[in-house]
Image (tube, rainbow, N blue to C red):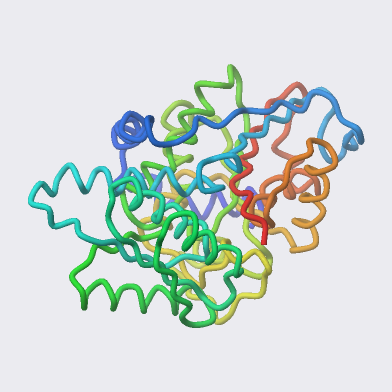
Length: 339
């Protein structure tokens, strides 16, 4: 969807109010501060290989928010720990006895970390596409139970929901929960606190939890800041949902970026993205791989494929029309759990 047609798709939802507020995000920031890392911002003001002007103007500044250095290797720890801490505050009767979720890997690691902090057991369902390395981390780093089920996230998620209902356990949604979105939105608050100026923020999209929270935080501060989402060509879940005006379930997904590949999102996320996100662009797996190589060469940083998606959109010039001379672009490098 180009910027013009995306704006047309958004306009009919302009008056829609989400169930996640900036107050929720600010409360989440206070709640999770002792349990997560405030990740650094890296400004690339010099390059081994300067970008061409038709890709990124020489006078503009590129800022990388290194959520890849977050505890568990991705931003997902924020939403998970916020959800569990908030639930623990409300459930004083000891009913929070165990957690269940489904994940492509990173959300599962976040939930396992949160469960570890609260000293309760966690069971994580993962699709067969999830790398073995993530199952090993779940089991060895955080003592979680990791179970493979189905070929895609949606099948693993169905099994997780059934398990939670059968055993009376707490299910933690990977992207469609107020507390999860509020936790992820704390990334947006940190961007606003750390950058004196920001014209564009670029965010990878899986189910939409991160971009929902970041967009809410950023647009509350300044509606003029452009929020751009990035999805794989092989998993255009939110791209299609906004274009068609409904929650679309993809018939199949075809990307190696498994954490960006749910077959469908949720109405909560779709509504927030319709209202607050300016454009979604698509990148190929090859473009994400090139971005991985670029950030390794330029900065010595290792990113997983999904973690390089937002940067790939910049490096391919797909956002050039949003980047003005002397502008400031923030890219969230969201994960480093290399397969």
